[in-house]
Amino acid sequence: SCLVMPTMEPNITSCEEWEEAHHLLFHLGNLSLLLGLVIPTTLTLHMILLRLMLMTGGCLFITWATLYRCNLDVMVWNVVFLLVNFMHFFYLVYKRRPIKIDRELKSVYKRMFEPLHVREALFQRLTGQFCTIQSLKKGQVYAAEDKTSVDERLSILLKGKMKVSYRGHFLHNIYTNAFIDSPEFRSTQMNRGEKFQVTIMAEENCKFLCWSRERLTYFLESDSFLNEVFRYLIGKDITNKLYSLNDPTLTDKAAKKMERQPSLCSQVSMMQMRNSMGSTSDTGDILNQIHRGGSSGSSHRKSHHLPSSCDTIGPSVSV
Image (cartoon, rainbow, N blue to C red):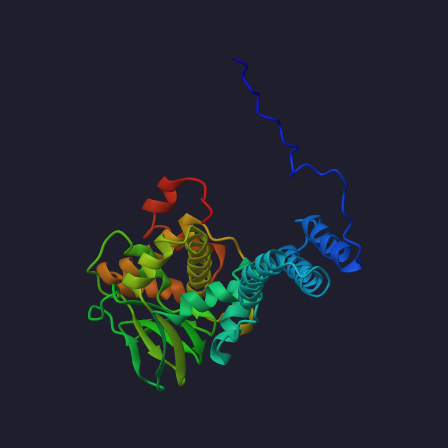
């Protein structure tokens, strides 16, 4: 018996003759895809431009497949691609929309946060969820010594002027775009339950930006960049307040020009100044030294009351 071998049929999928697209739309569609893929990633808008070119190519393919090829599969797939790319394109454009910062917060953003490259969207997150704008009338007290807890809040003065005093003795003023209670915030990060050692009172009608301390701390722990921004801003603010203690006649204009790099020694000195005034029996002598101004001699005299931290820390450590 003879075995009959099955005859091999020719492969019907082999391309014996290449078929041309015969239309400019097909080539323009592919050109759009190519342009989108070669856009340099160094361009700021490269993702938006990529999605735009992919959408353009999809539209050209849909037109070509519908009007000139009558190919349903090609048309349907490109409609899907077009919808997906449109959603991405819309999201990218939405993310780049201009953020409208509250009019009352523009000054503090421009002066304090924008120079440190904090974007508007991040600033809006920082101030939008757990932050309130509060006000005090002239003569009202923000914090009373030995009564008000330091654990509840952290504030920035937006409008007006405040006066810091101890037992009726003037220490220094707080002006706009400055933290109100930065020394207390820094000093009690590890030790809770303390009270203000000074009285802070509104010299004029004031508005201030107020964070819940607990929620702010939790938020900063989740964002290392903002955490470093706050460390710097609070450190610089404490240093400026220290210079104000050395020179109580410091004007608002001069205080705003201070751009000194804060040091750990300066921050400790600020807290020692307040705590020493609250604990020593020789308070009058310390206050007299403060009011003598910011000369090197007065600084040397105060060092007899505040020697420990600055002498033991050594070189100043930048915050």
